[in-house]
Image 1 (cartoon, rainbow, N blue to C red):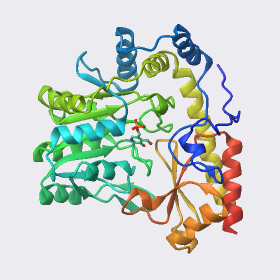
Image 2: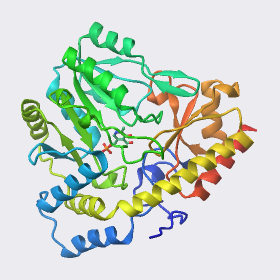
Image 3: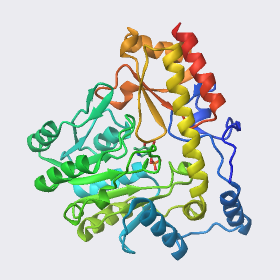
Image 4: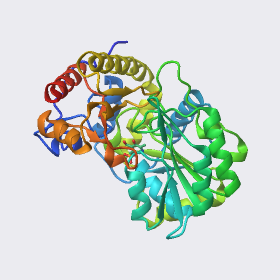
Length: 383
Ligand SMILES: Cc1ncc(COP(=O)(O)O)c(C=O)c1O
């Protein structure tokens, strides 16, 4: 099967957050992709649209079967029916999870730099934000376990939001790394809220380990957040599946979810997710090859035209983290160069918290020609 990822689809004036908030910049910021889904999936959605009635909708047995097969095949875990909870988004689920397992002013730990809604969701729920910064050495990120444990102990941390794979630094945590974290959290009674939304984008030669596969002893304090929304670009259809193995935490999660009001996922989202999980694999495999080409393109371009800017080689995600420390620019100058002169909308590193200054995040899930245009604009502005 072959798909045309080179085709440029105009997304302007579709209410796209990525394209329509500002028309003066080329957008490679928010994590959504500029590729349409393949025909067989669009046909399934169209069939549902053609039915014409969009009343209250629930997930069906075929939806659960599709999700179950995907999780068993792709991630190696199986969830008992009834242990999943569907919610309209991962950030939404983080908020519910925090309210389910902590009280106001309790400490919640995150690792920065990290996807910025993590800190927002903690402070917006009036919890105390505790940050364990990641370590950055020789172009690679890691976790200082002693500092992590210290942060947990000193602050009496009740919950930890794990980003796995990690956005924006692109780490795919190894089984050893995850087990070490799981063990600390188990010992101190910390609930792990594991956000695995990027887990279908793993580079060749890299192994993804789901937190759910670490061992039964790490499940009683786990809330696992999964979704097809990055994998198949369904963010606008709002479908997420949350696994809460511990029945007591599950009841608390459900209660907080109910307290939000009506929270069923939407009718088209259900159809789309099921179609993607059953028919989307060939498209995803081709897409990942295309993204490899995009990463290679950026790497070569930087080496030839902007060697002062370093690519932090990602192990997963379609987000690239660029290190501007070698340019001699200040953080403010870098931002002005990217936005003011290169006319690019990237995500400036400092929005991801501690350690994010002098980095830019580029979303490479776009046709090669868009990426080429962006890199050329960047190099011209840099000169
Ligand atoms: C780590 C991470 N979690 C969650 C989300 C957003 O998920 P949702 O749109 O389902 O709230 C993103 C989007 O970029 C993300 O990178």
